[in-house]
Length: 194
Ligand SMILES: CC(C)(COP(=O)(O)OP(=O)(O)OC[C@H]1O[C@@H](n2cnc3c(N)ncnc32)[C@H](O)[C@@H]1OP(=O)(O)O)[C@@H](O)C(=O)NCCC(=O)NCCS
Image 1 (cartoon, rainbow, N blue to C red):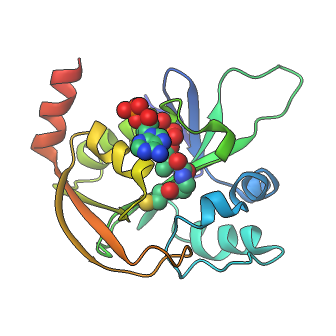
Image 2: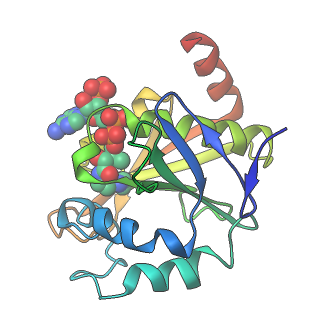
Protein backbone atom coordinates (compact mmCIF):
# COMPACT_ATOMS: atom_id res chain seq x y z
CA UNK A 1 0.00 0.00 0.00
CA UNK A 2 1.42 3.38 -0.98
CA UNK A 3 1.79 6.17 1.55
CA UNK A 4 -0.24 9.17 0.35
CA UNK A 5 0.47 12.70 1.58
CA UNK A 6 -1.58 15.66 0.37
CA UNK A 7 -3.28 13.53 -2.31
CA UNK A 8 0.01 12.38 -3.82
CA UNK A 9 1.81 9.07 -3.32
CA UNK A 10 5.18 9.29 -1.62
CA UNK A 11 8.00 7.86 -3.72
CA UNK A 12 11.38 6.65 -2.56
CA UNK A 13 14.22 6.25 -5.01
CA UNK A 14 17.78 5.32 -4.19
CA UNK A 15 18.67 8.83 -3.02
CA UNK A 16 15.40 10.74 -2.90
CA UNK A 17 12.15 10.93 -1.00
CA UNK A 18 9.43 12.59 -3.07
CA UNK A 19 6.13 13.89 -1.70
CA UNK A 20 3.51 16.48 -2.48
CA UNK A 21 4.67 20.08 -2.14
CA UNK A 22 3.14 22.01 0.77
CA UNK A 23 3.17 25.68 1.73
CA UNK A 24 5.70 24.86 4.46
CA UNK A 25 8.18 24.04 1.66
CA UNK A 26 8.07 27.61 0.31
CA UNK A 27 11.29 28.88 1.99
CA UNK A 28 13.41 25.95 0.75
CA UNK A 29 11.71 26.08 -2.65
CA UNK A 30 12.59 29.78 -2.94
CA UNK A 31 16.17 29.22 -1.73
CA UNK A 32 16.91 26.78 -4.54
CA UNK A 33 14.58 28.00 -7.27
CA UNK A 34 15.11 31.76 -7.24
CA UNK A 35 18.41 31.51 -9.08
CA UNK A 36 18.90 32.78 -12.63
CA UNK A 37 20.69 29.52 -13.54
CA UNK A 38 17.43 27.68 -12.83
CA UNK A 39 14.80 30.22 -13.91
CA UNK A 40 16.58 31.23 -17.13
CA UNK A 41 15.84 27.75 -18.52
CA UNK A 42 12.09 28.16 -18.03
CA UNK A 43 9.34 29.62 -20.22
CA UNK A 44 9.15 33.41 -20.39
CA UNK A 45 5.85 33.27 -18.50
CA UNK A 46 7.95 32.82 -15.34
CA UNK A 47 8.81 36.33 -14.07
CA UNK A 48 12.38 37.51 -13.70
CA UNK A 49 13.42 39.23 -11.48
CA UNK A 50 11.38 36.82 -9.40
CA UNK A 51 8.95 38.65 -7.08
CA UNK A 52 9.29 38.54 -3.30
CA UNK A 53 6.80 36.01 -1.94
CA UNK A 54 6.28 34.63 -5.45
CA UNK A 55 6.95 31.03 -4.49
CA UNK A 56 4.36 30.99 -1.68
CA UNK A 57 1.83 32.59 -4.06
CA UNK A 58 2.63 30.02 -6.72
CA UNK A 59 2.23 27.11 -4.30
CA UNK A 60 -1.03 28.55 -2.96
CA UNK A 61 -2.68 29.43 -6.26
CA UNK A 62 -1.09 27.18 -8.88
CA UNK A 63 -0.22 23.98 -7.04
CA UNK A 64 -2.40 23.29 -4.00
CA UNK A 65 -5.86 23.72 -5.64
CA UNK A 66 -4.85 21.33 -8.44
CA UNK A 67 -2.78 18.83 -6.50
CA UNK A 68 -3.84 15.25 -7.27
CA UNK A 69 -6.65 16.49 -9.58
CA UNK A 70 -5.26 17.80 -12.84
CA UNK A 71 -1.71 18.41 -11.59
CA UNK A 72 0.77 16.45 -9.49
CA UNK A 73 3.76 18.30 -8.05
CA UNK A 74 6.29 16.29 -6.10
CA UNK A 75 8.94 17.96 -3.97
CA UNK A 76 12.36 16.28 -4.03
CA UNK A 77 14.18 15.68 -0.74
CA UNK A 78 17.55 14.04 -0.21
CA UNK A 79 17.22 10.97 2.00
CA UNK A 80 20.79 11.27 3.20
CA UNK A 81 20.68 14.23 5.60
CA UNK A 82 21.70 14.71 9.22
CA UNK A 83 18.85 13.73 11.60
CA UNK A 84 18.89 17.11 13.33
CA UNK A 85 18.22 19.03 10.10
CA UNK A 86 14.66 19.46 8.81
CA UNK A 87 13.77 18.00 5.42
CA UNK A 88 14.56 20.45 2.66
CA UNK A 89 12.95 20.64 -0.74
CA UNK A 90 15.68 20.81 -3.41
CA UNK A 91 13.59 20.61 -6.59
CA UNK A 92 10.27 19.47 -8.02
CA UNK A 93 8.83 17.28 -10.73
CA UNK A 94 5.50 18.61 -12.02
CA UNK A 95 3.07 16.56 -14.07
CA UNK A 96 -0.18 17.90 -15.53
CA UNK A 97 -3.05 16.41 -17.51
CA UNK A 98 -3.47 19.07 -20.21
CA UNK A 99 -0.97 18.82 -23.02
CA UNK A 100 0.34 22.40 -23.27
CA UNK A 101 2.01 20.92 -25.49
CA UNK A 102 3.98 19.16 -22.74
CA UNK A 103 2.80 17.32 -19.62
CA UNK A 104 5.81 17.64 -17.35
CA UNK A 105 8.26 20.14 -15.94
CA UNK A 106 11.13 19.90 -13.49
CA UNK A 107 13.84 21.89 -11.82
CA UNK A 108 16.59 21.16 -9.30
CA UNK A 109 18.74 23.47 -7.18
CA UNK A 110 21.99 24.24 -8.98
CA UNK A 111 24.32 22.59 -6.48
CA UNK A 112 22.59 19.25 -7.05
CA UNK A 113 22.95 19.15 -10.84
CA UNK A 114 24.90 16.55 -12.75
CA UNK A 115 24.53 13.67 -10.27
CA UNK A 116 21.70 11.89 -12.06
CA UNK A 117 19.13 13.04 -9.50
CA UNK A 118 16.52 14.26 -11.97
CA UNK A 119 16.81 11.12 -14.06
CA UNK A 120 16.16 9.22 -10.82
CA UNK A 121 13.24 11.48 -9.85
CA UNK A 122 11.28 11.30 -13.11
CA UNK A 123 11.26 7.50 -13.08
CA UNK A 124 8.56 6.89 -10.41
CA UNK A 125 6.57 9.83 -11.80
CA UNK A 126 6.40 8.22 -15.23
CA UNK A 127 5.54 4.85 -13.70
CA UNK A 128 2.70 6.56 -11.82
CA UNK A 129 1.50 8.49 -14.88
CA UNK A 130 1.28 5.37 -17.02
CA UNK A 131 0.26 2.80 -14.42
CA UNK A 132 -2.12 4.81 -12.21
CA UNK A 133 -3.20 8.00 -13.96
CA UNK A 134 -4.09 6.43 -17.29
CA UNK A 135 -1.73 8.38 -19.53
CA UNK A 136 -1.07 6.53 -22.81
CA UNK A 137 1.66 8.96 -23.83
CA UNK A 138 3.52 11.88 -22.31
CA UNK A 139 4.98 14.94 -23.99
CA UNK A 140 8.02 16.80 -22.72
CA UNK A 141 9.72 20.01 -23.75
CA UNK A 142 12.92 21.96 -23.21
CA UNK A 143 14.59 25.02 -24.67
CA UNK A 144 16.67 24.13 -27.70
CA UNK A 145 20.12 24.46 -26.11
CA UNK A 146 19.16 23.22 -22.63
CA UNK A 147 21.40 20.17 -22.88
CA UNK A 148 20.91 18.99 -19.30
CA UNK A 149 17.16 18.82 -19.64
CA UNK A 150 17.50 17.25 -23.10
CA UNK A 151 19.77 14.55 -21.65
CA UNK A 152 17.17 13.61 -19.04
CA UNK A 153 14.73 12.94 -21.90
CA UNK A 154 17.29 11.00 -23.92
CA UNK A 155 18.29 8.92 -20.90
CA UNK A 156 14.66 8.00 -20.18
CA UNK A 157 13.77 6.78 -23.66
CA UNK A 158 11.84 9.78 -25.04
CA UNK A 159 11.73 10.47 -28.79
CA UNK A 160 12.31 13.95 -30.26
CA UNK A 161 9.27 14.97 -32.32
CA UNK A 162 9.84 18.53 -33.55
CA UNK A 163 11.13 22.01 -32.71
CA UNK A 164 8.90 25.08 -32.51
CA UNK A 165 9.32 28.78 -31.63
CA UNK A 166 9.06 29.61 -27.94
CA UNK A 167 10.22 32.41 -25.63
CA UNK A 168 12.20 31.62 -22.48
CA UNK A 169 13.43 33.71 -19.57
CA UNK A 170 16.87 33.50 -21.19
CA UNK A 171 16.27 35.56 -24.36
CA UNK A 172 18.99 33.64 -26.20
CA UNK A 173 16.58 30.71 -26.44
CA UNK A 174 14.05 31.09 -29.22
CA UNK A 175 12.82 27.52 -29.77
CA UNK A 176 11.83 24.49 -27.80
CA UNK A 177 12.14 20.80 -28.50
CA UNK A 178 9.07 18.59 -28.09
CA UNK A 179 9.49 14.97 -27.10
CA UNK A 180 7.11 12.04 -26.82
CA UNK A 181 7.18 8.89 -24.72
CA UNK A 182 4.45 6.27 -25.04
CA UNK A 183 3.50 3.84 -22.30
CA UNK A 184 4.84 1.00 -24.44
CA UNK A 185 8.16 2.78 -25.04
CA UNK A 186 8.52 3.43 -21.31
CA UNK A 187 7.86 -0.24 -20.51
CA UNK A 188 10.45 -1.32 -23.06
CA UNK A 189 12.95 1.21 -21.73
CA UNK A 190 12.35 0.06 -18.13
CA UNK A 191 12.78 -3.59 -19.11
CA UNK A 192 16.05 -2.84 -20.90
CA UNK A 193 17.39 -0.95 -17.85
CA UNK A 194 16.35 -3.69 -15.41
C1 LIG B 1 17.56 20.06 -16.10
C2 LIG B 1 17.91 19.60 -14.68
C3 LIG B 1 16.64 19.32 -13.92
C4 LIG B 1 18.74 18.33 -14.80
O1 LIG B 1 18.91 17.78 -13.49
P1 LIG B 1 20.15 16.82 -13.16
O2 LIG B 1 19.85 16.11 -11.92
O3 LIG B 1 21.38 17.60 -13.28
O4 LIG B 1 20.03 15.79 -14.39
P2 LIG B 1 20.82 14.43 -14.52
O5 LIG B 1 22.09 14.51 -13.73
O6 LIG B 1 19.87 13.33 -14.25
O7 LIG B 1 21.16 14.43 -16.07
C5 LIG B 1 21.81 15.55 -16.66
C6 LIG B 1 22.63 15.08 -17.85
O8 LIG B 1 23.09 16.21 -18.55
C7 LIG B 1 24.49 16.07 -18.75
N1 LIG B 1 25.05 17.41 -18.84
C8 LIG B 1 25.37 18.24 -17.84
N2 LIG B 1 25.87 19.39 -18.34
C9 LIG B 1 25.81 19.26 -19.69
C10 LIG B 1 26.16 20.10 -20.75
N3 LIG B 1 26.64 21.32 -20.55
N4 LIG B 1 25.98 19.64 -21.99
C11 LIG B 1 25.48 18.42 -22.22
N5 LIG B 1 25.11 17.58 -21.23
C12 LIG B 1 25.29 18.01 -20.00
C13 LIG B 1 24.95 15.31 -17.56
O9 LIG B 1 26.22 14.76 -17.80
C14 LIG B 1 23.85 14.28 -17.45
O10 LIG B 1 23.97 13.28 -18.44
P3 LIG B 1 24.78 11.90 -18.18
O11 LIG B 1 24.11 11.24 -17.01
O12 LIG B 1 24.63 11.16 -19.44
O13 LIG B 1 26.19 12.26 -17.86
C15 LIG B 1 18.74 20.70 -13.93
O14 LIG B 1 19.88 20.96 -14.68
C16 LIG B 1 17.96 21.98 -13.73
O15 LIG B 1 17.18 22.10 -12.81
N6 LIG B 1 18.19 22.97 -14.62
C17 LIG B 1 17.51 24.26 -14.52
C18 LIG B 1 16.01 24.15 -14.75
C19 LIG B 1 15.68 23.40 -15.99
O16 LIG B 1 16.40 23.39 -16.98
N7 LIG B 1 14.51 22.74 -15.97
C20 LIG B 1 14.01 22.02 -17.13
C21 LIG B 1 13.34 22.94 -18.03
S1 LIG B 1 12.83 22.06 -19.50
